[in-house]
Image 1 (spheres, rainbow, N blue to C red):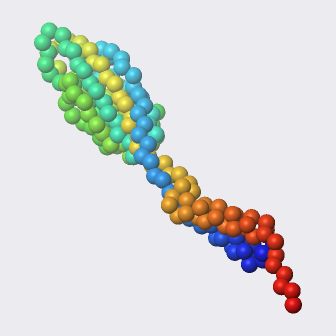
Image 2 (tube, one colour; image 1 turned 180 degrees about the horizontal axis):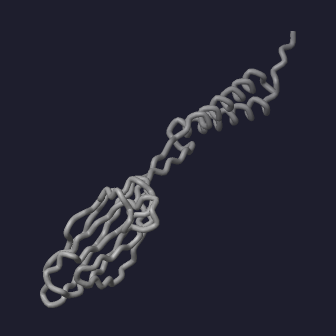
Image 3 (cartoon, rainbow, N blue to C red; image 1 turned 120 degrees about the vertical axis):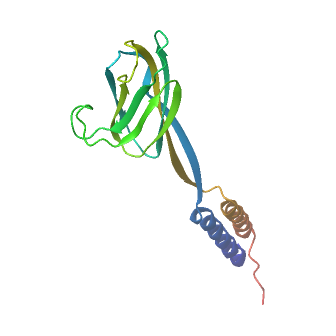
Length: 188
């Protein structure tokens, strides 16, 4: 056994494995997830009536995409009033005051994208009070919540980590070489 070679091998092995384990490599991945919160359904809305749907949304940098298709009878081309707002602590959307509207506009056949920043129950209101004809409108609405988040993982697969692993392997070979060699004893 050659003591200097063994000590050099142990030192290289320790420095290599220390470099491998001490320097983390951080990976960031964007995760995009879509969830249907209001499945396609045919909603008949009579003239002068209001239809309300509750949506329960969990928010963390989300967008609510709503596709609205409206079929009116007998050529009634007047749009519907669509309102979207966060329901407060009251039990119903009709008595939810004060209303801060995320959407408050007339819609016909279109898609809307609304940023959602707060978790909670939202009220989606279809108002057919402005129709000029006393006819029912059939509305098909689909609401999809798109969420974006960032997933962070820490691994040991970077360039410094691989160099440290190689240095540790070389140190192991030097250690084995030093242990397997006979010691030189000077005869004096």
